[in-house]
Amino acid sequence: MVPTNSVDSKPSTAGQFDLKAYLAERRQQVEAALDQAVALRYPETLYEAMRYSLLAGGKRLRPILCLATCELAGGSTALAMPTACALEMIHTMSLIHDDLPAMDNDDYRRGRLTNHKVYGEDVAILTGDALLTYAFEHVATQTQGADPNQVLRVVAGLGKAVGGEGLVGGQIVDLASEGNPDVTLETLTYIHNHKTAALLEISVTSGAMLAGASEDDIDHLRQYAQRIGLAFQIVDDILDITSTPETLGKSVGKDITAQKVTYPSLWGLDESRRQASQLIEAAKESLAGFGDLRLPLLAIADFIVARTY
Image (cartoon, rainbow, N blue to C red; front, side, top):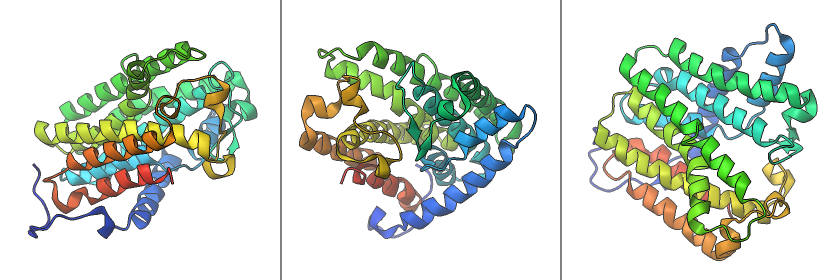
């Protein structure tokens, strides 16, 4: 494990950590970096559309996880920031495309009209394409001070997380499963391990890779990420039933409308909450031995499941 910054033998807890202040500070850093990374230039319509969705706010959870694990492994926020921005570009692309009429057909995202509702479907598709491809360019050209082999590893990991073995693979199985009441738990878990957890996994591991973490540490962080990724999706399924558009900033009840099998539809709400909490506890156990530097990750894990209540 990486060296800890505490000699106290008592385990630290996320309750000692001010997550609200941490997220606010990191979110501000990410927002500033994104604003600089995607400046308005010709052709203005494309860059306006990119900035419209990219700078629309949100939790910025994926870039923040990347920054946190880079620091945990002895690196800096500056080292990881290009990758953190790339993760948000990829995530934003996935939201733009997911909201299209051919996919989930949503009108609102992050409390505002979806990209295709403002700019049209044609521009929205190209906007997502531009964000996805620029993400890889940004990592390759803007990362400073990292081992080139680790940068290459991050680029390859991003490609896997968003392609057929990741987000796109999960999305296509998800589309094929709509309206099928016989979707199994195994298929549902496949969908979300790829559609949701894969990008969260590379968000966590990429920061550690850039900082030169050991393979053992990266494996523990991967376990953490996989568990919070699945818990995140279970909570999203719950919120689609229990929350409101005003609270979420996006449409609710769309899973029922699309006749999708979800974790609550298989398990019920109470069991879904229990499973999510169990995954979060297992995720936190994966971080044993990292010392106080793991506190942001512990607190983020608790935040993910606390969204249910």
